[in-house]
Amino acid sequence: MGSQTLRPYTVGRYNLRNKSSILAVSREVELALSAQEPVVALESTIITHGMPYPQNLETAVEVEQIIRKEGAVPATIAILRGQVHVGLSAVELETLAEKKEPCVKTSRRDFPFVLAKGLNGGTTVSGTMLVAHHAGIPVFVTGGIGGVHRGAENTLDISADLTELGRTPVAVVSAGVKSILDVEKTLEYLETQGVCVSVLGSDNRFPDFFTRDSGCKAPCHVETPLMAAHMMNKWQEMKINSGMLIAVPIPEEHQAEGKLIKEAIDIAVKEAELAVSGREVTPFILQRVFEITGGQSLKSNIALIKNNAKAGAQIAVELARLKS
Ligand code: PSU
Ligand code: MN
Image (tube, rainbow, N blue to C red; front, side):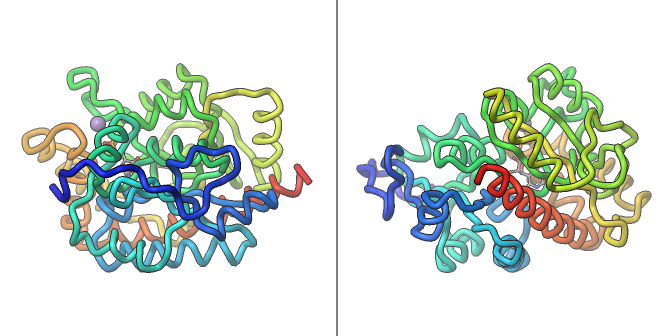
């Protein structure tokens, strides 16, 4: 697995004043943060482990463009040779997306190892939240978060994303919770963790990534990005140090065909039970659903993350306005 030598931490290209030098913050992100302009954090596991090449690279680039178009600065977060990066160059994005170099799916627990060994890491929702918070970025856009897996009563497979949401004050914009998971149990777990869960849009049904209705109601419902920003503002004023989850339903026209996706997921989840465990479960299921649906799942995935990027950027812009 890549270079196993111990490297000293290199000093970041641009380090935020009063921030740990362990973060290499890009000049664009550094400037935006110091001017209190809107910034949107993005994860990298979706690039390194969640989507195939070249769609992963195309999507990562387009998502950054969408965020810029809305007037915010994108900050993709990843680990490159043992250095945590906030804001990647085109070449850095390409390096990760091509998957030629080994790369560890990095959640909170993996940082000490990946950094000490000088490895590359694609940061999950939990890993990205942790870094975004260090860097002072409160809005983070992704596709879907990890959650309580089906059968977790036996396996105890519950994503570290949920405990991270319980302990780190970053708002995560996602298309809800993927139906490869147990959506009801995931919502229960988030309640226990004190996470404000809302749905943004016209109704209060909680989405399950590929479709707009998981069958569960969202605990909170906000109609506009401005109202989501108001919620974040109150959350910050109250110093509620747990995270927020803002669910954005997939646009009507991009919903996956319900029956097809449901069947594919059921097959993939059963196969995963026999084939994999630990951090490999989610990437395995995503890959199998992609194969079984003949690529349909990836199309929906790309459409919804672009939609999330737009909504997340609008929230970040409104929040910056409220604070100015
Ligand atoms: N769901 C997706 N695509 C992804 C992931 C989840 O549709 O790429 C990634 C995210 O990075 C998420 C992680 O944080 O998988 C959760 O992994 P696990 O279930 O092992 O905690
Ligand atoms: Mn797991």
